Image (cartoon, rainbow, N blue to C red; front, side, top):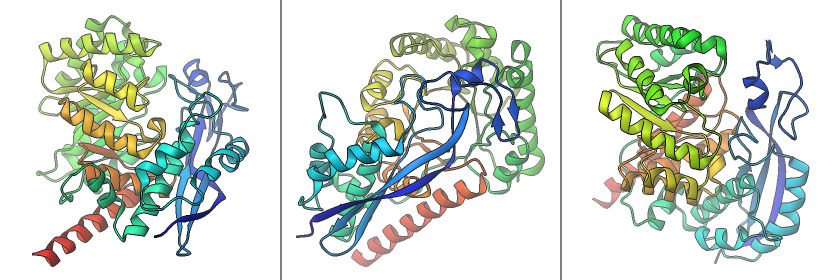
Amino acid sequence: MTSIVDVILAPALGAFYYDDQAAIRQGRDADGAFYAGAPVTPGFAAVRVPAAALGIGLVLSTGAVAWGDMVSVQYSGAAGRDPLFQPAAIAALVRAVVAPRLIGRPAGHADANAAIAFADHAGKRLPIAVEYGVSQALLQAEAMASQLTVAEVVAQLHDLPLPTRPVPIFAQSGDDRYNNVDKMILKRVDLLPHGLINAREKFGPDGAAFLDYVRWVAGRVRALGSQDYQPVLHFDVYGWIGLGIGLDPLAVAGFCARVAEAVPGWRVNIECPADYGSIDAQIDHYAHIVEAVDARTDAVAIVADEYCNTLADISRFCDARAGHIVQIKTPDVGSLLDTALAIRHAKAAGIGAYCGGSCAETDLSARICVHVAVATQADMMLAKPGMGVDEAITIVGNEQARLIAAMQAKAAARA
């Protein structure tokens, strides 16, 4: 029986930055890759800091090492999320608490090992980033011990058939909101462009600048894409519909309908149209927004993001139908075992399951998320990490292709 004999740690970097969302919303000016001015969210030494991560390796009795990366999301400390990731404090916690819980355990039981590793400490849940990275390593350990892929491990845990098709990929533009759209068109991504509508000038008076951008994206796809290429237009507006035109759910829904009217014939996803300041208010108002949008158009889907963090949060949003789609933002969910449960819960509720994440993640966390998303057949997943577009599409797209090829080969061998 393969067992876990040691736990090792390695310094790591995420592919983007941790940004103080509250400070940016207050109007901090960008200065190249930096933001001017002081931060306001606790833990931030500047408005933008490098995305720190921490690798955790489970050394197996076979000599193999199963790795995972503990990392957080770009907008740490916002909308009910854990505070800014602090590698030294996380390393000390893992050595003192998590490692003793895992050393000596059999490697082939990711779910049981996760239950032991993630038990409360000092009366509190472990940091979400710890759950995230350790669950990656536990799934890898079981896959190694069983000579399976992580996708097969997840499928077995949920009694699911082996996956036969990839998951649609959504690419995000970052601030290079025009050139990166061309990259997405060239690579025929399934959903685009994100757009990073996170500041007043990007939304514009009464949303005029945003509507112009929506029209430009649709026109660019028509001008440069082939006739059979019809991606979904997905825009993350970071609450700016609410900030720009007011928080009344009917007004927010009306503006969302205007977006669809601006680009007839397109499917449009609008992520985080408004921020109501708490999970209870977000769920209540989003349920009304969804109802009002449905009465106006079937071309728009509202995507829940802020305050939709953990498995419990996601379940509440789905049960209240407070979104047509929920972003299952993997570093905010914590354990990837919970991500699998969240995807399945959303699909069972008739809500779109978006296996998301963050540009601040690592190559390793992105690749393991592919296995969870494909095994559970999420409705879409984020191309991650980073904001360069090409790299994220390559990491996620190639991992999906390799996985599907391996599953097809196994199916052929059994036939």
